[in-house]
Length: 296
Image (cartoon, rainbow, N blue to C red; front, side):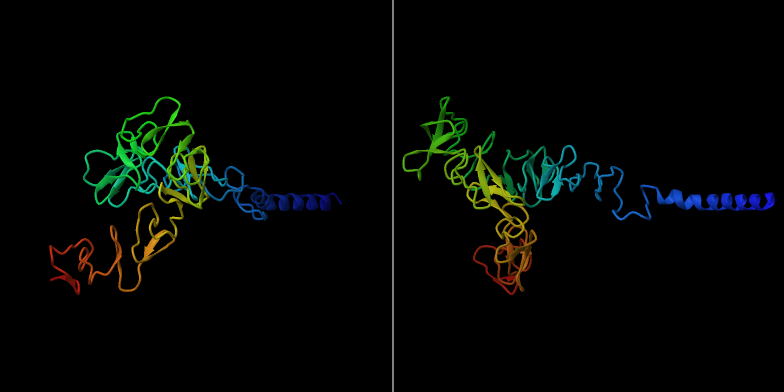
């Protein structure tokens, strides 16, 4: 009888020892064979993404926060100090053959960076339409109280600037040309946001004198406001990237059949384009015309 009990006890111990690795494996957090929720990762939060270690293309949490030093532009975490497509601000593209350092664009071959807000156009620094280049950056001389009518020309304390002249309107207001002689609240006007004739457009709102674009939209200039760079043929992928006769699809220019995408000109016909004859950038001299891709 004692022999039978001993045999049964030995069998139970052997079974337990044999099954223990499977039981231990089933309880691990890194490979739960019985889990229905998926791998929660090291943090246990359920996020399937991991930190990029400072990459300009995406470190962030599942909640949308970016790693230190990165900013969220649309759905991507970027470094506004070095990203040429988002230099200094989301959507502020430097242009072709340009780099970004310290949040300012530097054109190819240039010795010094552009002023804040400027981009590279045909190899030279340029501000958006309606803005002028001043040492402090791209400004609107028509309504900037610190550069009213000219760089460095400041209005008296408490006064605003309208149409290049210091106005009697209080700070936060401006007498705009289209305002009927009344002082307009430029802190909330969608057509005079932060100054006269500065548009936010239908894809943004004006808050405290700043255009706040809707999610996924980007502010390009005072004349157009917020745009969707994913589909806008005049701001395709980045501000001021023109597709010409082509369409903008997912932030990239798509040319019609027979057209070729040239970086600075958009979609062109290499067979007839005088500025891009036969290949992009090949301009015909003087009165010569482009015929079948040759300057004649």
